[in-house]
Image (cartoon, rainbow, N blue to C red; front, side, top):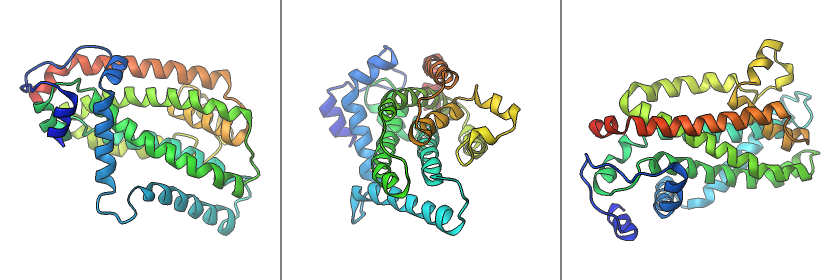
Length: 280
């Protein structure tokens, strides 16, 4: 795989102490889009390698999961929450995208050290490729979810759903910023991966995914207004479940945290680049 990438990208061989190409994160994504595509396709092939159904599993698994939740909450438990399966799955899918990207980014540098020693490219590409890998699975799961939503609930398509595109774009950028920061932290301090794994379940329950944010105590609702993970969960629920656009507070929270995440993640990556070289 490394040889094919080296040939296709026409890049130079570097030593471990060579500095990668300078630029900014958006320029790097565009300039090295072919490499990002190769890395994403590599991970997809590895995920479904030796599987009889191959990529079809990416369609079957979310469909099966949605049906399990429907049977558990709507048929067995009968919780009496109208369209709860939509509320739950919307939050879970968006959360799983973020959580999987965050965990994968903690091994983005260490797990690709051999490739980094062979090929000159901005190392930011590695955590970014993991985000796009999980983005593909998120989008596939949403595509599977839409027709199921129409069958299992009373929710119908509305013009507000068009705002999923800018919402998803912001969500991806926010996650890229977090992934850049986590990839650095987990490389310099190896315990950070385990800390991330421990904190994600806590963050899950601090995010209104399995419960409506309106039912939380007032101080917790205030916390939701400044919590980016809560803001994204609420925004997806507003568009797909409640049938209206996110409130200005939610929208501003997402926009501000997306900018902060991107700037901080990229600055942190550049600031500690020399330390990353030493760790390899």
